[in-house]
Length: 127
Length: 293
Image (tube, rainbow over all chains, first blue to last red; front, side, top):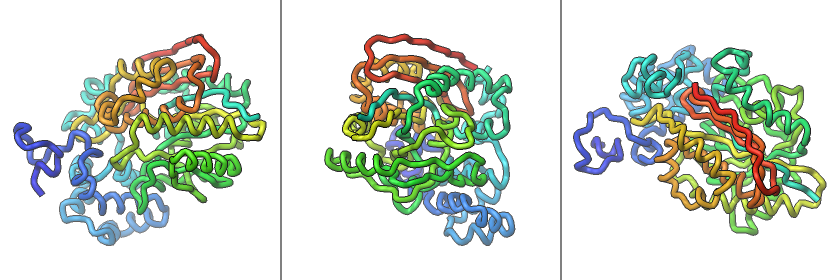
C-alpha cells in the first residue's frame, strides 16, 4: 500500500511524510479497512473477561485477531499515534487505555507530535 | 393525544461521564460546564415528559465497528442497559423503553421509506448515557422512558444531513399520530465541533458552534441543505455528529421557542453545547450562558 492510499490525498498534493495521518480518517476507506483487525481486537476489550485475558498474556491475546506485525508492535509499545496511523479508530483503541490508562488529550497531542501542555493551550484553546 | 413538547440538543463527550463518576462536577474545570445545564434540568423537572426519544451514535459498543453497521437503527426493547465500553458497566440505572411507541415509530418510518434496522436488544453507550445524566442527573431510576435511535456516524458513508432532517419529520409525525396521552421530548446528541483523530486532531470551531446554536432553532432548513463534507469541514470529522441534531429539529414544528443555550470549550477535545427549544411557540426568549475555557 502506498502513501497515497493511506492518506487519501491525491497525487501531487505536495510532499507528505511517509507516516502522515489522514486528514479525516473516516473518509479514507483504505485506512479504515487496514484497521479492521486492530479495531476488532480493541473492541473485544468491552468484555471484562477479555480484559483479564489481555492483562494476563497480551501477546497471546492479540494474536487471536490477525493484526499486522506493525499493528502488533504499535499496540505492544502503546504507540497511540501509530495505532491510529495503521487504521485504528480512536473510539476503539481508546479501550486499551482501560488496561493502561493514558489521557485522551495526550493521544491528541501525540497525533500532532506536540507537547501535551502546548497542545491543550494552543490547539484546544484551554485557558 | 401525544404531544411533543420540546427538543433538546447536547454534546455527549465521554469524559463528562467520567467526571460525574469521579464526583468532579464542582471542580473549577467542570463547574461552568455543568452549571449550564441547570435551566434545562429545572425546565424538565417542571414539564415532566413521559418519553425521551434519544438520537445518538454508537462508538464501538454495538452498532459501529461490529459485524453489522446500520445507518439508522431504532430500539424496540423493554429495557436498554448501559453497556460496557471497556471500563466496566457504569453505576447508573438501566433505561426503561417504550416498545409500543417504538413499533408505532418503526411502522411510520418504513411507511415513509426509511427502512430502519430494528433492535430487539440494545445496550447504549455514552451517546445516550451522558445526555440522560446531563438532563436528569443521577436518579435512582430515570423519570422518563426512552426510545433510542442510533445513526451511523463512524463508518463512512454517514447519512446526508437533509436525510436526517426528513427522518426527524417522520419521527415528529409518528409522535403526533400516537394515540397515547404521553408527552415527548426529542434529544439530538453529539458534537459540537471536534476532531479527535487524524492530521486535524484537536480541531474545534467555537464560532461555527455558536452560529449552529442559533441556526438549529431559526434556520434548520439551511443546515439541512449542507453536505456531509460541509459538516466535516465546518465541525470536524467527529463534529459531523451535529447532523443528529437535525433529526431532533425535524421532529419539531417550524416555529420553536429557544429557552436556553449553553456553550463551553474545550470539554476534553470538544466544543460542548446544548439547546432547549419549546415546541410550537413563536418567538424566542433566549437566555445564553456562554463561556470559553
